[in-house]
Image 1 (cartoon, rainbow, N blue to C red):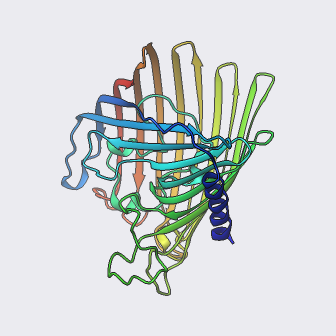
Image 2 (tube, rainbow, N blue to C red):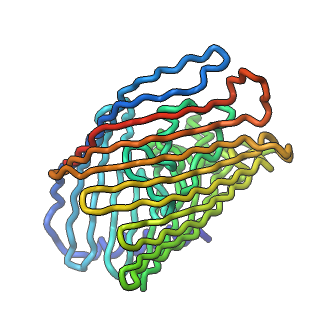
Length: 369
C-alpha cells in the first residue's frame, strides 16, 4: 500500500509537469557554509588507549540550487550539495523537487526521509549537538555501545528515495518516503528483494517512514509536535534471528519570549535488524535567544539491549551547553561545553576498553555564503 501511494503521487506530479507549457530554464545559484573549530577533550584512557586532547575540525559544503515555475503553477527545483573537505564522492542531498501550494512537495533523489524533516527535539545552538553525532567526534564511543540507536530523531541516511510531504493545512503536515537507506549507494543500486541479475550488491537496506506534524502560533506562543514511524528492512539477510527494524517516536517544542523548550522520545524494536534487540532514547533541552546572542542546554539518554532478552542494556548519556553570537554578514562565533558517558553492561572490568567517559570544550567560527 505504501509503495502504491508514493508511486501514485509521483505519477500525478510527473503527468502534471509533462502537460505544462514552456517556462524559463533553471539557473543555478551557488552558496554554502564553512565551519572551523578547535577544541580540547579529556577522556578515559583505559586499556592502553590514548586519545588526542586538542583537535582542529572543519566542515564545508557547497550548494548548487535553482528552480523554475511552470505555467501550470508547479515549481521544479534542483538541489546539489557537495562536500568540499571530505573524500566522499556522493556528496550530501542531491535531488529534484516538484512542488505547489495545492499538491505539496515531491522529492526524487539522494535525500533523507520525510519523517526526519518533521521531527521536533531538544533545541541546541553552537558547534556541538546531541542528535547529529558531534559529541562522538571528540569523545570516543566504544563499538559495543556505538552500534544501533544513536539519536532520538527519525534518522535517515541520504539514500535514493521518493519523498512526499502534503500541503500545510491549518498547521498540520504529513509525509511519507521509500527507498534506499544508504548514502554510499547510487541510483543504479539493486534494492533488497529484487533479483540481482548483475551480481552486484545484494545487502542494501531499503526503508520507509511516515509521520505527521503540527506547528502553530498562539498569540506569541509557538507549539510544534510530531509522531513518526520508520521501518528498515533486513538488508538482504535471512535467518531466525533477523527481523525488520521498527522505530516509533514523538517530539514536541514550545517557544515563548525568546525561550524554546523541546523534548523527544524514540522506541526501537529489532535494532540492527536483530530480532528482540530493543532500544530506547529521549532528550530534553531549553534554549534562549535575544538579539545576536543564543544559549542552550540539552541532555540525551540512550539504552539498548546487549543481546536478545538479556535484561542488560548498554547506556549512553550526554549533555551539551552551547552558545552563539551573530557577528553579522553570515558569520557567527560559537562554542560548546559537553560531557558524555558510555557504559557497556557486559564488561565490568576496572580498565574496560568498552566504557568511556569524557568532557570537552569546542569553539570556532561558522560562515555561511
